[in-house]
Structures are given as structure tokens and as C-alpha cells.
Length: 110
Image (tube, rainbow, N blue to C red; front, side, top):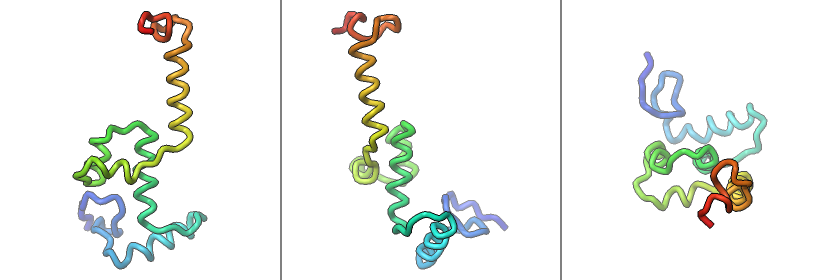
């Protein structure tokens, strides 16, 4: 019978995975997926960074990870090149847009 624990990773019955079993399951999962060995904790960093890249609001991320300190996203979310490139594209559009979209130097704000 399925138990809705609200967890992402569960046993086949929906119950939380016992802490001692996490490493065993994680190592097997990575091996089957053909991914290099990595500590289970690294998955938290990866998931948090993926949410950052997708633009998910920090309050939502904090709720999902059950963080109570606003310092936690800074610890777990990492700026990746794609985020820097997108920020550069946005700044370029803001500064150098031809004015057709109502933004940029012709918009009267600069």
C-alpha cells in the first residue's frame, strides 16, 4: 500500500528511505545511469542549481528544500555560465535595443 510521505525519493511503497540505505541506493542509481560516482549530498546542490536556472522563486525553493534561512540558497545554488550569458543578453537588450520593444536607450530611461 502506497504511503504518501511527500518525499521525492522513497521506497517502492512511498515511505522515506532509511538513512543508512541512501548511499547504497544512490551509488546503484548513478552506476545504472552511467554517471560518475558522487556523494548523495551533491544532488541537493544540483537540484537547487537547476531550480535557479529555471527561474524558480527563492521562496518556493526554500519551501521545497525545507530551508528556514535565506542564506541556504546562496550555499546550494551555483551560478553557471548559462545564467551569466542570459544576464549579459538581457543587459545588452536593455542598453542597445533599437527602441521597437520600448526598452533600451531609446525608451527614455537612459
